[in-house]
Length: 273
Image (cartoon, rainbow, N blue to C red):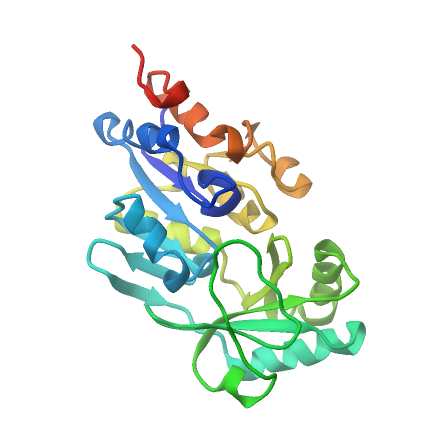
């Protein structure tokens, strides 16, 4: 079956290890329009940390950003909606978690098209994302936020996330989004809620949707969509609920499925009949 809505996560999924889309992936996405299908990006990154990648893709449509909290019209460079995190709730949640784990390293993402990622002492970030280092104090909480990310010097991500759920799962969503990225977001806000909003705007439903992802924050999206495809490099929790597992992001796993569904073979970057 071919689907009318193709929802893709970005890091670890559509993007390769170099954090860029491959030639083959670009070509595979080009199959969708002629087949009557639409691509929608669904990413944990807030808008300021994904805009350049979307421009590089020549992407013009809706993007679901910030774990589902931001709906961004890329062609118009405009936020259609944005869910803010209550800063008092975030601080209460953080206090509860630290009562169990000891002091955490943390970062916050400010809201808006140009909102900064501010990182307190000890917080580290891989890849190409930019952050501004600040002391841990009032500056972190001075402006509206959309999420908080925590790290622990000893606990791995899954352990830290489990402890955070136990301590504050009634206040915030707790999700593992990538290595060293355990995020606290507004309660009830997920990639699924954001994707459902975008789909309704396009006149589409869960039954029309195939979703691709690699991390536990993609689980709600997989449960919502008609078909969920996990990357071979995906977290075991996501693989366990996926309808299908494709090859890794380094091996153009998204493109392999799109080629099968929408026609052609693009291996090596060329379309063959």
